[in-house]
Image 1 (cartoon, rainbow, N blue to C red):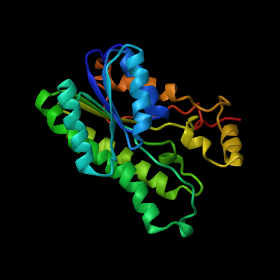
Image 2: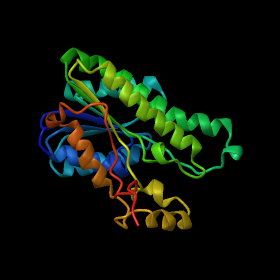
Image 3: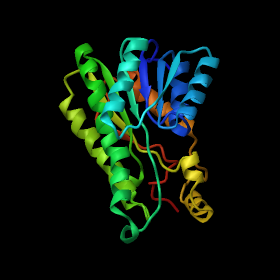
Image 4: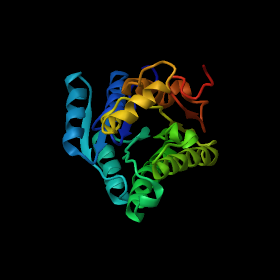
Length: 250
Protein backbone atom coordinates (compact mmCIF):
# COMPACT_ATOMS: atom_id res chain seq x y z
CA UNK A 1 0.00 0.00 0.00
CA UNK A 2 1.58 3.30 -1.03
CA UNK A 3 1.58 6.21 1.35
CA UNK A 4 2.35 4.46 4.66
CA UNK A 5 6.04 3.68 4.23
CA UNK A 6 8.04 4.74 7.27
CA UNK A 7 4.92 5.41 9.35
CA UNK A 8 4.17 3.88 12.75
CA UNK A 9 0.72 2.34 13.17
CA UNK A 10 -0.91 1.33 16.44
CA UNK A 11 -3.77 -1.12 15.95
CA UNK A 12 -6.12 -2.34 18.67
CA UNK A 13 -8.01 -5.59 18.34
CA UNK A 14 -5.12 -6.76 16.17
CA UNK A 15 -4.95 -10.30 17.52
CA UNK A 16 -7.32 -11.64 14.87
CA UNK A 17 -9.73 -10.76 12.10
CA UNK A 18 -9.78 -7.25 10.67
CA UNK A 19 -7.07 -6.00 13.01
CA UNK A 20 -4.65 -8.75 12.05
CA UNK A 21 -5.32 -8.31 8.34
CA UNK A 22 -4.76 -4.56 8.65
CA UNK A 23 -1.48 -5.05 10.51
CA UNK A 24 -0.22 -7.22 7.65
CA UNK A 25 -1.40 -4.85 4.92
CA UNK A 26 0.17 -1.80 6.57
CA UNK A 27 3.39 -3.69 7.28
CA UNK A 28 3.64 -4.74 3.65
CA UNK A 29 3.31 -1.07 2.80
CA UNK A 30 6.37 -0.29 4.92
CA UNK A 31 4.79 0.74 8.23
CA UNK A 32 6.01 -0.40 11.65
CA UNK A 33 3.13 -1.93 13.59
CA UNK A 34 2.23 -1.92 17.27
CA UNK A 35 -0.07 -4.92 17.65
CA UNK A 36 -2.47 -4.44 20.58
CA UNK A 37 -5.09 -6.87 21.85
CA UNK A 38 -6.54 -7.93 25.17
CA UNK A 39 -5.60 -11.45 24.04
CA UNK A 40 -1.79 -11.35 24.21
CA UNK A 41 -1.22 -14.71 22.47
CA UNK A 42 -3.27 -13.43 19.54
CA UNK A 43 -1.26 -10.21 19.43
CA UNK A 44 1.96 -12.20 19.55
CA UNK A 45 0.82 -14.41 16.68
CA UNK A 46 0.00 -11.37 14.55
CA UNK A 47 3.36 -9.78 15.35
CA UNK A 48 5.11 -13.02 14.42
CA UNK A 49 3.33 -13.08 11.06
CA UNK A 50 4.47 -9.50 10.42
CA UNK A 51 8.08 -10.19 11.38
CA UNK A 52 8.18 -13.44 9.38
CA UNK A 53 7.28 -11.33 6.36
CA UNK A 54 10.31 -9.15 7.07
CA UNK A 55 8.64 -6.20 8.77
CA UNK A 56 8.80 -4.66 12.25
CA UNK A 57 6.15 -5.22 14.91
CA UNK A 58 5.75 -5.43 18.66
CA UNK A 59 2.85 -7.13 20.50
CA UNK A 60 1.17 -5.63 23.56
CA UNK A 61 -1.67 -6.72 25.81
CA UNK A 62 -4.07 -3.79 26.09
CA UNK A 63 -7.57 -3.44 27.51
CA UNK A 64 -8.81 -0.39 25.62
CA UNK A 65 -11.49 0.33 28.21
CA UNK A 66 -8.68 1.35 30.59
CA UNK A 67 -7.10 4.69 29.71
CA UNK A 68 -3.91 3.96 31.64
CA UNK A 69 -3.32 0.77 29.65
CA UNK A 70 -3.78 2.60 26.36
CA UNK A 71 -1.42 5.35 27.46
CA UNK A 72 1.17 2.73 28.42
CA UNK A 73 0.81 1.15 24.98
CA UNK A 74 1.46 4.49 23.32
CA UNK A 75 4.51 4.98 25.55
CA UNK A 76 5.81 1.54 24.50
CA UNK A 77 5.21 2.42 20.86
CA UNK A 78 7.14 5.67 21.21
CA UNK A 79 9.99 3.89 22.99
CA UNK A 80 10.20 1.28 20.22
CA UNK A 81 9.55 3.39 17.13
CA UNK A 82 9.67 7.03 18.21
CA UNK A 83 6.05 8.03 17.65
CA UNK A 84 2.57 6.94 16.55
CA UNK A 85 1.45 8.27 13.15
CA UNK A 86 -1.57 6.07 12.51
CA UNK A 87 -4.17 4.83 14.96
CA UNK A 88 -6.64 2.12 14.01
CA UNK A 89 -9.02 1.83 16.97
CA UNK A 90 -10.56 -1.52 16.11
CA UNK A 91 -10.99 -3.48 19.36
CA UNK A 92 -14.51 -4.77 19.78
CA UNK A 93 -16.86 -7.34 21.26
CA UNK A 94 -20.26 -8.61 20.15
CA UNK A 95 -23.17 -10.48 21.62
CA UNK A 96 -26.84 -10.85 20.77
CA UNK A 97 -29.37 -10.24 23.53
CA UNK A 98 -32.89 -8.71 23.55
CA UNK A 99 -33.03 -5.30 25.19
CA UNK A 100 -35.36 -6.39 27.99
CA UNK A 101 -33.03 -9.27 28.86
CA UNK A 102 -29.91 -7.11 28.69
CA UNK A 103 -28.19 -6.34 31.96
CA UNK A 104 -26.77 -2.95 32.82
CA UNK A 105 -23.34 -4.59 32.92
CA UNK A 106 -23.76 -5.87 29.36
CA UNK A 107 -24.77 -2.41 28.14
CA UNK A 108 -21.89 -0.73 29.97
CA UNK A 109 -19.32 -3.25 28.76
CA UNK A 110 -20.30 -2.76 25.12
CA UNK A 111 -19.86 1.00 25.42
CA UNK A 112 -16.66 0.76 27.48
CA UNK A 113 -14.92 -1.32 24.81
CA UNK A 114 -16.24 0.32 21.65
CA UNK A 115 -16.94 3.98 22.40
CA UNK A 116 -14.89 4.67 25.53
CA UNK A 117 -12.12 2.53 24.06
CA UNK A 118 -12.00 4.72 20.96
CA UNK A 119 -12.05 7.85 23.11
CA UNK A 120 -9.16 6.47 25.17
CA UNK A 121 -7.14 5.73 22.04
CA UNK A 122 -7.76 9.16 20.54
CA UNK A 123 -6.81 10.83 23.81
CA UNK A 124 -3.59 8.86 24.13
CA UNK A 125 -2.21 9.42 20.62
CA UNK A 126 -3.42 12.95 19.91
CA UNK A 127 -0.77 14.96 21.82
CA UNK A 128 2.06 13.50 19.74
CA UNK A 129 0.17 13.92 16.47
CA UNK A 130 -0.60 17.55 17.29
CA UNK A 131 3.08 18.20 17.98
CA UNK A 132 3.96 16.87 14.51
CA UNK A 133 0.93 18.33 12.69
CA UNK A 134 0.24 14.97 11.08
CA UNK A 135 -1.83 11.97 11.99
CA UNK A 136 -4.48 9.49 10.96
CA UNK A 137 -7.23 8.54 13.41
CA UNK A 138 -9.29 5.64 12.09
CA UNK A 139 -11.85 3.60 13.99
CA UNK A 140 -14.24 0.74 13.36
CA UNK A 141 -17.92 1.57 13.38
CA UNK A 142 -20.42 -0.81 11.75
CA UNK A 143 -23.06 -0.91 9.08
CA UNK A 144 -25.32 -1.79 12.01
CA UNK A 145 -24.93 1.79 13.26
CA UNK A 146 -27.03 2.82 10.25
CA UNK A 147 -29.28 -0.22 9.74
CA UNK A 148 -29.78 -1.56 13.25
CA UNK A 149 -29.83 -5.23 14.12
CA UNK A 150 -32.03 -7.66 16.02
CA UNK A 151 -30.85 -8.23 19.60
CA UNK A 152 -27.97 -5.82 18.97
CA UNK A 153 -29.26 -2.58 20.49
CA UNK A 154 -26.18 -2.03 22.67
CA UNK A 155 -23.76 -2.93 19.86
CA UNK A 156 -25.44 -0.73 17.25
CA UNK A 157 -25.75 2.18 19.67
CA UNK A 158 -22.06 1.99 20.60
CA UNK A 159 -21.03 1.79 16.94
CA UNK A 160 -23.26 4.77 16.13
CA UNK A 161 -21.46 6.64 18.89
CA UNK A 162 -18.14 5.95 17.14
CA UNK A 163 -19.57 7.39 13.91
CA UNK A 164 -20.62 10.54 15.77
CA UNK A 165 -17.26 10.83 17.51
CA UNK A 166 -15.52 10.50 14.14
CA UNK A 167 -17.40 13.41 12.57
CA UNK A 168 -17.05 15.58 15.67
CA UNK A 169 -13.30 15.03 15.94
CA UNK A 170 -12.79 15.53 12.21
CA UNK A 171 -14.35 18.98 12.63
CA UNK A 172 -12.27 19.74 15.71
CA UNK A 173 -9.00 18.70 14.05
CA UNK A 174 -9.65 19.86 10.50
CA UNK A 175 -6.84 22.44 10.47
CA UNK A 176 -4.22 20.41 12.31
CA UNK A 177 -3.01 17.99 9.63
CA UNK A 178 -4.82 15.13 11.40
CA UNK A 179 -7.63 13.33 9.58
CA UNK A 180 -10.37 11.38 11.35
CA UNK A 181 -12.33 8.67 9.56
CA UNK A 182 -14.06 5.37 10.27
CA UNK A 183 -14.85 2.16 8.47
CA UNK A 184 -18.31 0.68 8.91
CA UNK A 185 -18.02 -2.91 7.72
CA UNK A 186 -20.89 -5.03 6.62
CA UNK A 187 -20.82 -8.68 7.66
CA UNK A 188 -17.20 -9.84 7.63
CA UNK A 189 -16.05 -13.43 7.96
CA UNK A 190 -14.26 -13.16 11.30
CA UNK A 191 -14.18 -15.34 14.44
CA UNK A 192 -16.66 -12.92 16.03
CA UNK A 193 -19.21 -13.51 13.25
CA UNK A 194 -18.64 -17.25 13.19
CA UNK A 195 -19.63 -17.39 16.87
CA UNK A 196 -23.15 -16.34 15.86
CA UNK A 197 -25.96 -18.90 15.46
CA UNK A 198 -25.80 -20.73 12.12
CA UNK A 199 -29.34 -19.66 11.24
CA UNK A 200 -28.37 -16.00 11.65
CA UNK A 201 -25.26 -16.49 9.51
CA UNK A 202 -27.29 -18.07 6.70
CA UNK A 203 -29.92 -15.34 6.86
CA UNK A 204 -27.34 -12.56 6.73
CA UNK A 205 -25.62 -14.10 3.71
CA UNK A 206 -28.87 -13.83 1.74
CA UNK A 207 -29.02 -10.07 2.35
CA UNK A 208 -25.69 -9.39 0.60
CA UNK A 209 -26.00 -8.72 -3.16
CA UNK A 210 -22.49 -10.12 -3.75
CA UNK A 211 -23.63 -13.32 -2.00
CA UNK A 212 -20.51 -13.59 0.12
CA UNK A 213 -19.31 -12.26 3.42
CA UNK A 214 -16.53 -9.74 3.35
CA UNK A 215 -13.00 -10.82 4.09
CA UNK A 216 -10.89 -9.07 6.73
CA UNK A 217 -8.59 -7.97 3.90
CA UNK A 218 -11.49 -6.10 2.28
CA UNK A 219 -11.60 -3.82 5.32
CA UNK A 220 -7.83 -3.75 5.78
CA UNK A 221 -7.29 -2.21 2.35
CA UNK A 222 -9.92 0.45 3.07
CA UNK A 223 -8.16 1.30 6.33
CA UNK A 224 -4.80 1.40 4.55
CA UNK A 225 -6.13 3.99 2.12
CA UNK A 226 -7.49 6.16 4.94
CA UNK A 227 -4.10 5.84 6.68
CA UNK A 228 -2.13 6.91 3.63
CA UNK A 229 -0.58 10.18 2.52
CA UNK A 230 -2.91 10.03 -0.48
CA UNK A 231 -5.95 10.39 1.81
CA UNK A 232 -4.85 13.74 3.20
CA UNK A 233 -8.03 15.50 1.95
CA UNK A 234 -10.35 12.81 3.31
CA UNK A 235 -11.76 13.44 6.78
CA UNK A 236 -15.04 13.01 8.63
CA UNK A 237 -15.98 10.05 6.44
CA UNK A 238 -17.65 6.77 7.35
CA UNK A 239 -16.56 4.30 4.66
CA UNK A 240 -18.76 1.20 4.55
CA UNK A 241 -17.40 -1.80 2.61
CA UNK A 242 -20.45 -4.08 2.72
CA UNK A 243 -20.85 -5.97 -0.56
CA UNK A 244 -23.73 -3.73 -1.60
CA UNK A 245 -25.87 -4.60 1.41
CA UNK A 246 -27.42 -1.13 1.66
CA UNK A 247 -28.42 -0.92 -2.00
CA UNK A 248 -32.05 -1.19 -3.00
CA UNK A 249 -32.03 -4.27 -5.19
CA UNK A 250 -34.28 -7.08 -6.43
